[in-house]
Length: 113
Length: 115
Image (tube, rainbow over the protein chains, first blue to last red):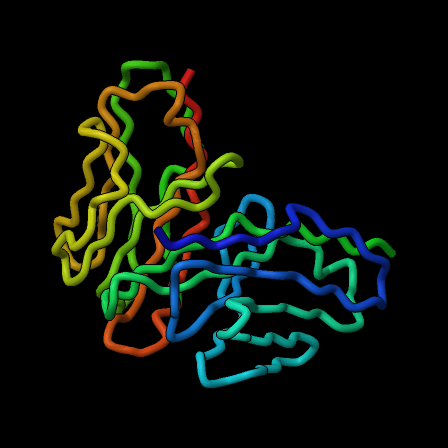
């Protein structure tokens, strides 16, 4: 069956450093991958989408890579700030064109000042 | 433009009671997803509607759970009877189907505690 793993439950880094989060998947060839941010007490919020034919996507301080050979996506936050502290979830589509997403369990990022 | 609206935000009930969670979609969206989130299992899809029709309910845990979409903008998730293991945060999300990206917009969630 399809499986998504975000292999760090928590990541602690110092302000100003680059945070790198990992999302691995198996038994699957997704057409795209999404990253969401979730703050405590709130629902996930969409950040970025990267398609299978794109190697890299950037949005301000965020960068996402997608390696379909390794079946892995990396999510980078450069010049991290305490305000970046949140849980980050990766999500992959399944069910053909129906639009269902399967989510990883997330990585909780803490950026210390 | 208001986002996805869920009510109540918090619900505490006793085992055996009926619980009804409510969700209002973003205007113009036609797909609705109900999720349950726990520390152990993460975010799990319970049921998905498209144009008011249930498409995939394979994630509904058991017959105690039911979901309806009486109109294009509103949905309910009912648990009857509730059990302590149903305690979780329940999210609904909406989407405008037909696009390639399938981005979902989540509500703030309902934190359910069953004693």
